[in-house]
Structure formats: C-alpha cells, structure tokens
Length: 310
Image 1 (cartoon, rainbow, N blue to C red):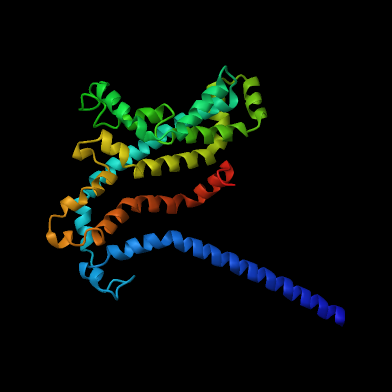
Image 2: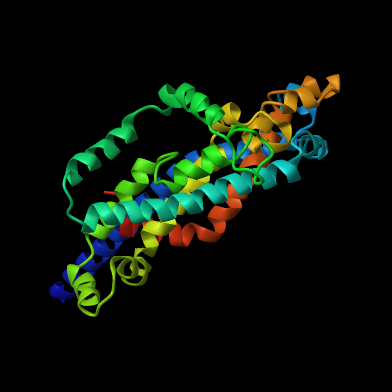
C-alpha cells in the first residue's frame, strides 16, 4: 500500500511539475508576444480616435468618439491606390530579381572551386557591413550619368525610374544583397554532393544541375530571401527619396512625409502626430501584415531549415 501511495505521489509531483513548467513557458510567450503586438494595437486604437479623445485623460485604449474620418483623409492624402501600385512594383520586382541572382551567386560560391573564391567571398561579406549611406552620393552621380534605355522609360537617365532598384538586385547585390548571397551559399554548401555528381554523370550541364536538381530543394532559402527582400524594399525610405523625385512614382514611405502637407484642414493639423500619423503608418504596413498572415507558416519553417536561428 505504501508503495502505491509513493508511486501516486511521484506521479502527481511529476505531472504538477510539467504543468507548472508549461504554464511558465506560456506566460513568457504571451508576455513577449504582447510586447510585439502592443504597438500595433496602440496604432489601431489611436487611428480610430477623434481629436478630442487625445485631450481626454480618461481615454487610454478604447476610443470614446469612434471616428473613421482619419482613414478617409489619409487614404486620399497617401493617394493609396497609386502609391500601393508603385510600392508593389518596386518591392516585388526587386525581390524576385534579387532572389534569383543571389541564388545563382550563392550556388557558385558553394559548389564551384575557382581561383580567389574565398577572397572574393570575403569582399562580399565586407559589403554587408559597409553602411549604404556612404555610397549614395556616388550612386546618384552614376545613375544620373547613365542613359536610360530608349523606349522603355521617359527619363533621360536612370533617375526617376526603377532601374536603380532593379539592376543592382539583378546583379546579386542591392539592398542586403550580400546577406542573401551568404544565406544561399550556406544552404547549398550543406546539400549532399551525390545529387550533383549523379546529375553530372547523366550528362546534365551546370545550369541544368542548378535549376533542376539544386534549386527545388532550396525552397526554404528562397522563401526567406524573397520575404526579407520584399519587406526591406517595401519599408525602405532612403533610396526612393534619393532616386525618385516625380510624385507619380512615389512609394508609400515617401507619401508618409507628405501626408501632413496634404491635410490642409487646420482641424486635422491639430491632431498630427496622433490619429492621422497612426492611420498613415497602419495603412502602410497593412499589406505586410496580410502577407505575413498567409505566409507565416512557410516563413517560420524556412527560417528553421536555413539555420538563421541558433
């Protein structure tokens, strides 16, 4: 009988310990998750507030005077359909070109042995730590001197076109290009050589080996690089402000700086920095939130398989 009681006591203690550990883990996850979600909730709450709610000390999270006027005004001020189209064209086009180019470059560094390979790869890594701000003046002068392709764009040079965003990405560089080359190199370096050797024995050339044998298993790296590139190009405000000056080509991050001037009504200028700016910021990041909702499972799996954590 005593042995039965002792076994039950150990079982209860072990089960209680598991429940306590699980409760602590869940509590920590909820706490950390709230830290990241709280700014979004605050942004959503203040975007629905009337101007008087910001002067009411009793209003903290839930608006007392629900107002959709912020969304109507900011939607017009952002010229949302046009800026959304421009931002999507820039971010998606640059992300696709950068993903393809960085995959090819990373595969070359991982699977081909050529003179100076390691030294060249060190230069690529060095480009990853160089601040992009130090080369923007030289890039501006360069793009201004380069003639635009005849018949493709209306500009006489590369400025006020998407070429400064497409061409460097198509060459495997551009925004965070060195990091993406490093991701693909590490992924292809870890793939078994037997796959490549079998394809070469069957008579496949280097390009066929890459596209038919090595690229399909690289889906995790492709998803990670594409999403990172898309989000970083979407959120980038420095390069568009330097290379794009025509208002019809403005992206959302550029429109954010002009929302205040577009809201000419003094009644809404008084709430600048509160409801209007929160609404503008929320409408800007809303497409990224929707994208993450549909791709978060693939994104998390890809992050784990590419080894970017740990």
